[in-house]
Each structure stands twice: as structure tokens, then as C-alpha cells.
Length: 251
Ligand SMILES: NC(=O)c1ccc[n+]([C@@H]2O[C@H](COP(=O)([O-])OP(=O)(O)OC[C@H]3O[C@@H](n4cnc5c(N)ncnc54)[C@H](OP(=O)(O)O)[C@@H]3O)[C@@H](O)[C@H]2O)c1
Image (tube, rainbow, N blue to C red; front, side, top):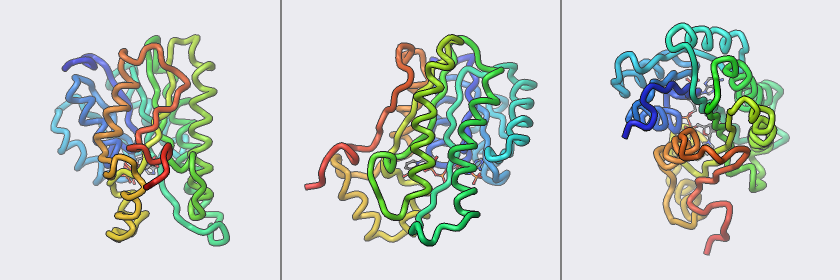
């Protein structure tokens, strides 16, 4: 499949998990990808893993810092000239009772998830042209009230809402914007949130109608679809990819 031949897609948080799985799918479909994340080691390992030569550019970036995003976009422009797609995927989790959330926690989560998503899109706009596609990454927690998730869930609700408003704002430039909403996906973030505890992970699995935890590739396939011309009449939408987690009652 070479649906993305000659196209370039920016993937924030592309060094691991859902971002890396999406980059792998995109490279497999002929795309060049730009990976952005804070850890250089992580990015280096991802570049090695993708093994796609000059089709992969990795740029250490903290999406919560607009100066970093300016540097990222400058490097993309220099190397590829333009972008055809953006997957604003970088995010951090926070599992804490409301009473225990510190200002630093709040700033970190809102900085990466909300501010980072907003400015990733804003800074990428000059490189995106007609036919461009943007996918944001929200979370199933937008749809369920979970006591430990106040700041994280609200930051992802902001992300979901951004896609709704970006869509009409950018439509006149021929750019589509959609959100993917993952359920429980076995990544580093999932391990951190569950503390690697098998009983907790089994409880999470038991909430999923399809009876299994998600894999990063499950989300990547949905993202690649939304980025592709096959989704050319879809904008402002949320694609929930959760095995039936939020839409059903466990039995
Ligand atoms: N796994 C799940 O169950 C699940 C469910 C719903 C939604 N999600 C969302 O899916 C997205 C990807 O998470 P994942 O599950 O694939 O976990 P992950 O492997 O931990 O990926 C998160 C990525 O974001 C990057 N990142 C974090 N803060 C950043 C920042 N300030 N600037 C740039 N990059 C940053 C991390 O790299 P560095 O640390 O190197 O920066 C990492 O590569 C997140 O937005 C998450 O909220 C995950």
C-alpha cells in the first residue's frame, strides 16, 4: 500500500506507544514522518525501530513550549517543505485525587495535553495545505467520570472540543480535523496508570465489551484512516476506538 507516498506527517509523542505505532503504519504506507517528543533517547530508539532512512526525522520537542514548536516546524520546513498531516498525540497522564493535585501537576498536564495540542496545530498551519488532515488524541475519560482523573479528563475534553472548532475554522483552507478517542491501550502510559498491577489491568479489561485491552496498532489504524483521503468527507468528528468500553455496561 502506498497511499501516503510523497506525503509527510508530523506525529507528536511519536517516540513510543500509539504515536510510534502510527508512524510505523504511515511509513509502511509510503509516508515520511516527523517524530517529536521530549526524550532524545526515546526518539533515537524509535528512528532505529522504524528503519526508514531519510523518511524519518526526529526532533526533540516539548510541545508545552512554543519555542520548541517553532524550532520543530522550522526543521520540518527545511527538510520536507510542507506537511500533509499532523497527529497531535503527545500527552501525559495524571492519576490523583482532586485534593492531592498540585499546581505543578496541573500545569504539566494542561501544558502538554491542552496547550501542547493547541499550539502544535497552530504552529503547523503554515506548512499544511489543501487536503491536509489533522487528528487529535483525546481519551475515553472524556465520556466517563472517574474520581482520579479530574485534570487529565478535563484536559482531554478540551482537546475534543478543539477539534470541533478547528474543523470549521480550517475548512476554508481544505484542512480536516478529527479526534481519535482511545480506550484502554497497553502502552507505557497504561503501565504507569495501572502501576503494572495485573489485577488492576484485569479489572480494566473486564470493562471492555470486546473482552481485550487495546493495542497501539488498533488506534494507529483509525488515525491513519482519518489522515488518509479515504476520510476526505469527514471533519469535526470523534472516532472512539475502545472495544466498546464507553458505550456499554459490563456484564
Ligand atoms: N494508553 C492509553 O490507555 C490511552 C488512553 C486514552 C488516551 N491515550 C492518549 O494517547 C496518547 C499517547 O499515549 P500512549 O498511550 O501512547 O503512551 P506513551 O507511550 O506514554 O506516549 C506518550 C508520548 O507523549 C510524549 N510526550 C509526553 N509529554 C510530552 C511533551 N510535553 N512534549 C512532547 N512529547 C510529549 C512522550 O514522549 P516523551 O516522554 O519523550 O516526551 C511519549 O512518547 C496520549 O495523549 C494519551 O493521553 C492513551
